[in-house]
Length: 394
Length: 177
Image (cartoon, rainbow over all chains, first blue to last red; front, side):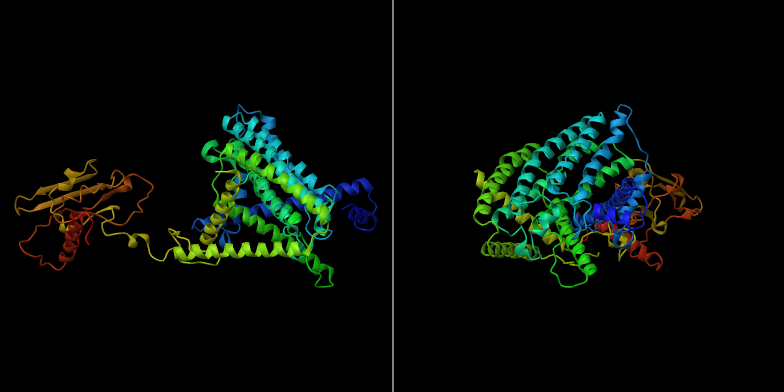
């Protein structure tokens, strides 16, 4: 980004401005673009999630606002903006008002290192992945602050649960990331993507059995960090009303939901970067623009597939209990992640560049899993003999 | 269960659960998009004995007041007098306050002709309580007098047939069948 800023100041339309001011303008511009991108993605995700969830439950979902209800999120947003912003009289008002922005900051900051294509990244810092896990931890502070300042027992319980959960699941997530870093030797997001290829057998998902396990460890931990079902204890409505967000109304409550749905895309993007080959596409054309577009599209589709999987998981699994949540993390994910990382280290010492046989074997294994899964789906369809409706348009 | 069995079991069950929900994603939704995006009006799909809003067929009402007496919340008010000259029952007022009605069906049970009955109609919302009172008698009418033998008046016969069918299906617990 600095090169771009320099170029704009030296020759572009920011010519003649002091360098510092030019940087500020470029940074503000990027922040504005990213913010709009996130709003759009989070909004569309919220609609899509309701549709996917509805289809899983044999319902239709929102389909009235716009074609197939596709601008339902806009209607919801406008409704929330026009609502009254209530601050409870017993609440700690300054903290209460500030908390949503803090949560928003934590998650928005992570988008600084989310890549979109070759060279399309706001800041390709050399500790990219570490930065992500560090800055998303700021969301905890926002949620805990919201829970505390609401002066409400449910909200406080929700905030504490969220803090305990996110801090616990940072460990398996970081260890799963380290498993990949063992093979890349870099923490930079673009560096990790460049270490992979466009083909599935060049992805880290199928690099060796240990990165394969690490993918699932990371995905589960990321879901837990993003407070997603089956780990959405901080807002478990059957026990805590709406958890830390109980007292929030209007736009401030909307910001928390923005964080939740935006986080989904973040999870997808980071998983894609680490395990699914990022924006890598085969060099099928000489045109840089077409190639760039293909990269952006590839990355977006991969990330959105994982978002879809997260919605699907939400429609499948029931919420875990608090003790189960902690058992899962400390007794299962953390030991597995440690053992996995050590085994991966041995593997990296023996075969630093991986082996084509291991990669091929893993690809065949992945394909076998997919085929088996498809067979199970067909089995359930055959057994229930339902009326089918394959089109997503209802 | 042991540690590794737990892991194996959770992976297997989540795999299976995801397969089940995936199979649900391609099934036809059951949603009935009431009220505008439906092929048939919901009222037309309801059973004959559905307990919707009350209706009265004045043509076959005998003015016996059985329904008024049966109503546990007195939402039916009937004024019936015997005309001294013609010796006929004259109905002067037959009001049902649907805002009070609790759709128990006790009024349609004792009705000898099936005159008072529930319809499948259920969209009764309105802006005032006053408009919820259905006044069936506009001007005084002579009550129906059952004839000996089958009904011969072609105007009344189909109404009476419907009323008696209503009573018949009411008498058998499983409906008509």
